[in-house]
Image (cartoon, rainbow, N blue to C red; front, top):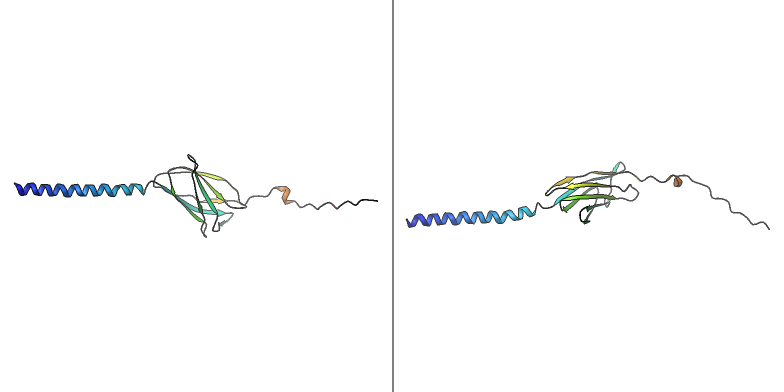
Length: 139
């Protein structure tokens, strides 16, 4: 009878230790899934953006911003984003500045490719006018 109770005690301890270990390993796994990733490619005109074009994600709820620069192939990645709505802006000199809103979920890895057109110049700058000749004073 004593050997049977020792055997049951050992099984109980092993099962309890295993369950505790599973619970401890489960917590870090949840922490890894609490943010989202947004990635994609930026196209300026007809070609991929050069390295260094700024991509900004602004959390609509709290105004927190995350910034990234494009790589040589025009790709970007914004990591560690909390779930929610984000306003995405691409800041490239000489190109249209418009925003897009994207919603990210917990643990999501979303793709967003963005194309921007070259900013058109106002018509007054396109036309070339000749300067007026200086007037001379008549004495």
